[in-house]
Every structure is written in C-alpha cells, then in structure tokens.
Image (cartoon, rainbow over all chains, first blue to last red; front, side):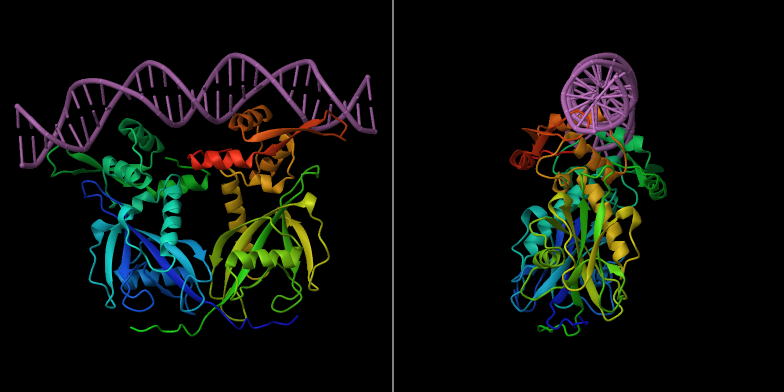
Length: 233
Length: 233
DNA sequence: TCAAAAGTGTTCTTGATACACCCATGC
DNA sequence: GCATGGGTGTATCAAGAACACTTTTGA
C-alpha cells in the first residue's frame, strides 16, 4: 500500500480554559476567562478563547499564541488537556479541538479590552454563562483535571504571587477543592515538606496581625521530584 | 471578522499504544504491539499501529477502528492519551497525532498474521525495537500514564481474565509498577476494599495448592466511585 | 478596646509496613 | 515426599485528623 494523502481533513483548533484567581478578594473564587464571539457561529455568545492551528506552529505554541492574543498574557503555566472530536461540535464543518488549560494569577493581570473587537470577561466557575460549541464540556474536563492535579503537583502556586502567606495558600486549596482544611494540620504538612522559603517580608495593611510571606522553593522541588519524591496535599 | 476557512490544515492521525499482558507466563512482562511498516516513510521499521482520522468518525472511533483493523480486537479498554504535534514528527508533511492507549488481556487474544501485509508483533516494554516517527516518546508517555493511573483506578483488571487469582493480580501490579508488594498486606488491602467477588472456582493444574478465583465487582466500584470513594494501591 | 486573622502542640485514630509459618497440589 | 506457590494474623510505626487558645495588627 502506498502513501495515500489523506484528502478530507478536519480543521484543527486550539481552545484554552484560562483559570484565574485573585488572592486579594475576601472570598476568592476560581474564575475562567471567556470571550464574547463577534462572528458566526454562536455570534454574541460566550466561548473559550481559541483559534485554528497554523502549520508552522506546534499545539503548545498555538495555545500560547491564542492566550497571548486574547489576553496579552505570556509565560503563564499552560498544559494540554484533551482533544475533543465530536462530529457535530462545530456547525460549520468538522473541527477537532485540542484543549489546553492555563493558570493565571490575577494580581499581575488586569483585563484589557478585548483585542479583536471581542469582549473578554472573567466568570466565576460557579456562575458560568452558556458557552458556545462543546465548551461547557471542555470546562468540566479542565476542572476535573485541575482538581485532580493540584493535590499532587505544586501547580497551585501559579495562581498566587511569588510571595504569599500560608493562609492565602490554604484558601487557594480550599477554593479549588471546595473543602476546608484544618489550619494547624495544613501548616504542619506544608512546613514538613520543606518546600517553602520564608522571605522575611510580612503581609501588612489589614486590621489584624501581619502574616509572614513565603516563596515556593522550585529548585528543591525539582531536585526531590527526580528522586521519586511525591508531594501530596 | 468573518469566518475564515482555515486553509492549510495538518493531517490528523491516531496512534495506539496497545499494552498486552499474559498472566499465564511464569515471569509476565508488559508488552506493546508494534507493526512493521510496509510503506514509506520508515518502511520496514517498527511503529505503533495507527492511521488517519476520517471525517465521519470521532477520534475514539478512529482509535477503535485502527485497533480492530490491525489486531482484530474489539471492545477492549482504550482511552485517549495525548496529542503530539512536533513540526517534524512526520517527514512527509505536517501530521498531528492523537495517541491512545489500550489494554489487552493476551489470554483471549492470539495474534493473527498482520492484516494488510504488515507484520505485527508484541515486544516487551523492556526490549522495544527502534520505532518510527516520535513513537518512542508516545510509548514513554503511555507508560507513565499507565503506571500513574493503575494505582488509583482499577484498570489493571482489563489486563487479566474475568476470573483471576490474588497472586495473578499482585504479579500484574508488580510487573507494571516494577516493584514488589508484601503478599499479606496486598491481600488485606484488596480484601478491605471489598471490590472482589469470590467466584467459587479454583485455579488448578499447577504443582502446588490451588488458588481461589475472583471477579472484580464493577457495579460496586461504580457505586462507590459516585460517592467520592477513591481506591488506591 | 475591639474585631479579625496569624500563629502554635498534643492526643488519638487510622492506615502502612514488617514479618513467618502451615497448607494443598501435581509430579 | 518434595518443591512450589496459596493462604493467614499481629505488632510496630508513621501519617492524618481532631481540637483551643494567645498574639498581633489597624481601625
């Protein structure tokens, strides 16, 4: 059998579930960036940022490009999630979509008006609007992945500033996992892993005791990881 | 902005990492099905079974179809792994590949001569030949996924016959995870989960005491799973 | 001085690990 | 009768869970 050029091809798109989190809020919520579509199909509806793969770029590059184009963000945590391929997921024609999820610390980022006439907005995951295509399902899979992964990989730090307090870290976990942790047990566990470095700084300005600031010790984590160490919260 | 038909498109392929396991072997090994390519590129080299996505099928269907065409197997465990998109992964042209992994119990399956003039053969994961394209990397990712997943999801049973002994189950875990378990602790843990049903049958025919046969209790597992239960080995 | 979150240890319970001997079978 | 794996329980250790009060800060 000779090489048969595969004639009819699906279009290949990349869609990004961009999770945002703001530790400064009193009751922080996990948020997702949506854009309001300015073109058909689903014109006027909210959807995940995304676009078509170009031939000169990898999927990772396409996802990073889309994220940059639609939000201005660069060098944030992003990873491939899953590839969706239902036959009718796009009414125009056959499109498969490689979904990514990204984690954004909202302190460093304030939303600029959407780039190409599209409105962008953050929605709490609890109050997402109706989404175009199969994006509701993509969000569902992304949430499951995030919740599963955050418990045994230190990706949660991507949602916080470089320096953070232990309470901020605990609230982050509680928000994402939708459960509460005992303060003393949480702190003991975190400290016992030895993965946080006290910076010496303090978080002040609130009408209560100031809190110590910490940084995540990436180098130490990577070293331990190579020796088969497993972090688990 | 109007709908811009995305002109240059990559071809979309599906590749399958088919894991095989035979509990009847004395020292079982995890194996992978490879096919010897009869066409260019990489003619004569070993590769993972795969082919191009057709427009009328989903990726899951394409993976199942490829698996069926190249092995005759149907209704085995199969799940999407990752989508690979390096620019030069196929020398012909731009091809992205959605990789799947499947689990096959080799007792129920003996390899027929390859379908379309291609030779198919099982290789121990420890002694894989050189593989075409980026298939070596795909296998690496599949192995990591299998090893990670088998510890907290009962997919290992897919590699055993419906009825199996506790020693067979233990050997399966030891083989895949490349570590040993204490026999008494292993059995206690398995029993405590209450997910095995004693069938009453015995595995005989070996020059030592006969062993009790068990079935995995899928219904009970699914019920527990919905209530947030987590199995972990 | 008050409200609000920061910070800190001990006890108890549970699950993980380590470990050795008798039993049944086929040859 | 012997070699081979099947089958069983207990004691120890480590990690997880439960739990309450004092300290510091800004308003």
